[in-house]
Length: 351
Image 1 (cartoon, rainbow, N blue to C red):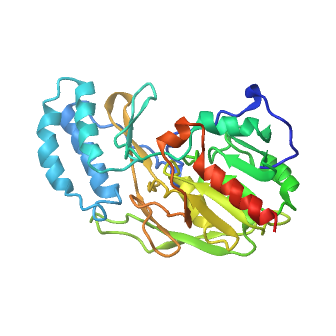
Image 2 (cartoon, one colour):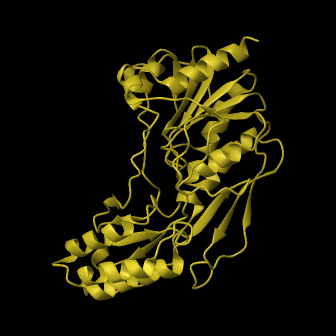
């Protein structure tokens, strides 16, 4: 995502889509063939959902959740719900106790309701970031990404890992303009995930050899402790050449799901330094299941690990260079993470 430079105006500055989750693809997952919706009575709907989580959900033991106790607590309320909306409210309250950003409920109209918001401070602010772009040379890509220079430093921002955010062919064409730059800032702080395959295709432009980037284990069996063997995730080189000079990868709490897969892969490359804040810690490979009346919900099905076997869920991935920031910084028009990266990159390029 880098191409020759053009000076931006406000109309050319990208509005990066910050999707909460790309359901069914976030974390590389795909929905199974959808079973028939349960009966419309509330007890049947509740039991169907409870049983699906009981058989499919991956983080019960890791999060020390007594799922049977939650059934005893919430089932009487669910069966006595006044209407479907009230039933959904009871279900959402129960699911909120999973503390899982990938467990969401979708209405018949397609509106997504999160069951859990960790309330993290986000070290990226769009209006402030846009002001930085106006002071640089910026080209808007077709989607939620862009490229150019800030303060004379090569800079790329990627807002999502899906085909409407960034296309591989367009990235590759733009990337030719960065072949010889001495250092590159790659900013994914605004990226909430999408498709693992796309994320790894972009990461492959920085890998000179195949490398294990992490592992996943899927639920396989009736017990909450029943998992298949660890499956290694591997990043391989892609493209005619790879960028091997220093890369500052800017990360933060908004980075979840497939973006954490990308970050987990990039951190295994010797020329990449993670900068900013810890990532959001949400990796679930969710599948979608039906309730009555067109309502659906998602269930996390795997446990994802970094290459050094650290669970990503609820923990995130730490930067090598932590850069503190606050709401006051952004209120005053400062982006401390980007400032740090530009200063460090400038010093490195000047050596």
